[in-house]
Image (spheres, rainbow, N blue to C red):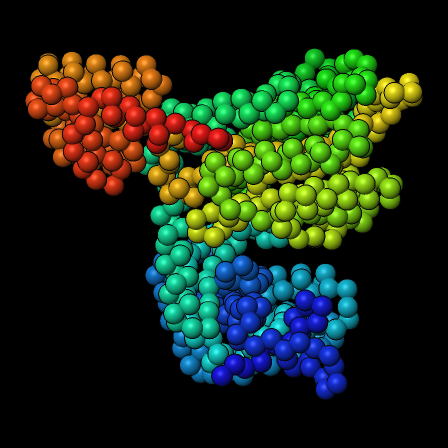
Length: 606
């Protein structure tokens, strides 16, 4: 039987303790997904209470619920170890069994300051100082009290199915100049079965971690000597990236884009014109040389504006589509860096389209077609949203209506389902955001289509219309892949390192049974045939057992293993093993080539 956990009004959760008869509120029960936020928030408090009972000198910071779990930031001189987490989790179970009533207490701000001063909770005092209201609420369970707005459960006994996961570092309030805290992550569910399924899901995520697979498959590395957030692509990773980039160049040219290149650094003047200096300088690398200030580019847009402005443009020239695989550099705090997914230097498939207002919708449709083809190629499902005008935006009502209607009408014409997120556009224009859904149901940032009113104004972009008058072009920023680094990180995890044959760094490995000259010579002949046909092939003739070399090829996720022995040599055959240790027996080279042409080329029609 379900129980009411809290209430909801306008998508905001209200504590059941605050419910007043006669109010029109939606009850949220433990059967509703929203109730998990309350459960996990209360589990965070349970964690904090357990820590305080075990390690009284610890100081508590914040402990919210997050997607799929919760965390609590804690200051402690000694690091929390895996053994500590086990002790904390056991203490949490003990407190849960006490079935302590959770009560909400609201008090004057000055009383809250006195309370947390007595508790010597410095971080809570800092939070209270930032609360504008004169009333502050806390939640109490047994002897434990915590600053919180809620809502929470009614008793610790309701928190039964939980697991502490790991510890990470986190700066207080995300400020690198402040103290480093220890963030304990956990998760909680209403049933043991749901918890078990989630832990299995997390285990699968761990197996697919692109940082782990990147090392195992020798795709990339990050070196302290080079700098945090800067990727060194190894040959295997370089092959995958090259295949994708070559495909992108070919497809852009086919779709009417012109390839351009812009410098990696530019005079600071251009970043002041674009507005990046005013709004983005904390994330820019700026330096001085020979009396001039320069910035390493964080974005490719200004260079494309300058190319557009390099000569007079006519309405006959439009639309103009500039494309660049441009490498950009942005300062990210060290605590936010994460493998390939959050870096300081990355390459984008960046394009800018300059068109008339009448051409806008057709150009958006063209980008949607391109994006769909790319997502289909890599097997991603996706969701789509439209971000509308936020507060503080620039541009006229007419411009915003034209751009937003064009985005929405383009999606409708393509029969693409979407949701509208009010106020989620940029200050300079509305956008379409595509989120990729991987094999585990996780979402990744995908293609973006962004209308921009700001840069054409800032750079005074113009074209001559039919009647000779000067008009301002409409501009679209767009990516169909986005950051190559982030996209490859997503691909590695989506495929679990098992890339489709057409994308595998090595497609075929030839393994002669022995190092005999005749078998090695025959293997080399096969290698040349496959290489000349455009396949990525290598010979493994190491002084290791056949079983070991086959196993090594499987560990490296190589799609096709060709074993060559005396019988294969005499019959001009190969023994084919496909990924997954499937022995498909002998076949001749002609049949092998037919097989590879079907499975190891970029899928036709893409």
